[in-house]
Length: 295
Length: 264
Image (cartoon, rainbow over all chains, first blue to last red; front, side, top):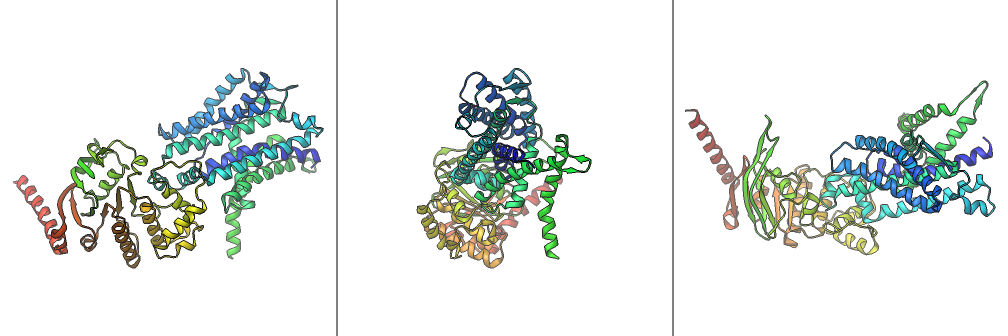
């Protein structure tokens, strides 16, 4: 793997880190399999691209993207809690609705940001090369997101969030409105996914309505790989594992793409197969390890 | 204090499986009453408690707590006044959170669970002191996950959580039924202690007639969704298990007789 490929993988890993932290919140903390992210990630990209094209500050565009993602997630939460639609189905409904909305937001299937300012400008202006700037900035931002979640999960609301995922009867009888917790948490998760989308579109220079396909699987793969490799004993450890899982996932893909076995080499079209295999391995590895150790 | 007026609850209404679980229950619970609730399976004991807590919507009737009509309040809103301990020891606590985190959630029952830190040093000391009265050594295990505790320990913790913020009424739904006899006795003693120390108003469902007679100042017997016996004070103290059985069979006998009359 070349240095550029390595830094590129780190950049992607950190940019997708927000999404992975969001997926951890819904999938692991709330026990809410949420496919909305397949729509809210490109939504974040679209909102950010349109805002930057309209002259909005790139950092402010991140907040706008997050707000849009938050709303999208809240729609899923409301469909599930107030209308009683199964969580998986509710999130799929929002996801396909977002496809149309994203096209409306951009007014076209894709939008380039060539020559426009991005969040990376302050670093590149300071003389840091683009290939180093993106991993550094995204790394710092995703660490901040991690610290925010670490704090949030230790507040009373965060405890209620964890209890809502584990035991709804218990937390309801402590006077917590679980509907509200679910709506806000799924909102937050999708707000994070939207930030991922906004960062990706700014570093790649384009937003595309199809860039969200397979987002949830990549997010899950990262969470599970992270848990398997780095453990999830405490909340802090689990959050860190999720973020590191995102890095490992992107590095694995970069490694696979740079692999050459005689005539054979992987192409980007093989990524879905590789991801599926990676998730299967990560899911079965702990069980296999236990079996082998028992013998 | 708590006024239950003509509570009716039907399950699977309008279907072939329709069951009338509560057929017009009226009960006035006075402040400081410790009522034991007995009755055979399907008599409506648990349904009554679930309707009081707001887990089940009711068909008709009214429920007042402190003269406030809470009939239409959702379960989480009623939790400010009503706390509960369930039959299943896993239901009242969150296994993936630590002991102190569970207590922190309970310590905010009826208040907002906002963005303040869940557990701070101040309430940690308070939790330790509260836990020590259980006599289970849990005060030294504040950071242990509740999932590591035994059923009896979890039930004792649930009981403490239900009374950490004084409720207007405490609902105990066969909360010792899933425990071994010795642990059940300990949890029961703890129940009596907490209720009398804090002068709580409580409703306790039990299948054990001895328990029902030993504990509390009042006893009600349910049958087929109706209250068929309501004794308190001296009258209750003088009762034996045989008296209860006699009353029970007397009611069932009447039913039998009336059924036969219908056939003739």
